[in-house]
Amino acid sequence: MTQNKEQEFSWYGSLYKTREEKRVTLSWLDEFIKSDCLKFITKEIRRLTAEGRHREAKRLKLQLPAIAVSALFPNERLKEQAGEHTGYALVDVDGMKTPVAEYMERSKGLPWLVLAYVSARGGGVHLIFRVETDTVHHAETCLALYDIVETTLGEAVDRGCTDITRTSLVCWDAECYYNPEAETFRVEAAADTHPSPAAD
Image (cartoon, rainbow, N blue to C red; front, side, top):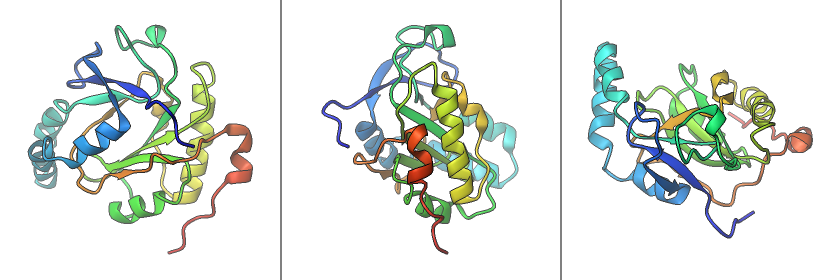
């Protein structure tokens, strides 16, 4: 389903920031992630991680910008100040046994996936799904989605993303996947639309 007006998301200059700086759309984010804007810092984070310099890598990682995926926060990014639900949910996967490129390719088989990109350290992925829910039923919808993602793709997801204030760190990924025509995940229909695991 194509939406007439693109949904906007609260943007933060770094993870330290809790006050919305501007609003962005997923089409803008797709182009930004693919651009060279964050290429240097992302490659530096991955170099430091590969060298085992995790404290330095983390310090750089916390300087990356972020978006609040599931709700707008006109003021502070606090649960009690959450505005309207965006209609999107975040799935974070890290520490995977599956090669990242293979997991990314298989994730494209999920009909509700709108945006997917490799995480800053390079060992995980950020997946953004279109969902039908509200702030009250957000956690319930996320858990139903997580179950399907785990069963279908075979890797545990970060269940802390049920927190509506959770952000997705933005980093460089020239192969970022964007599907504005993604379907909408609905809990009551999940059993009927459960995709089969991708073939090896």
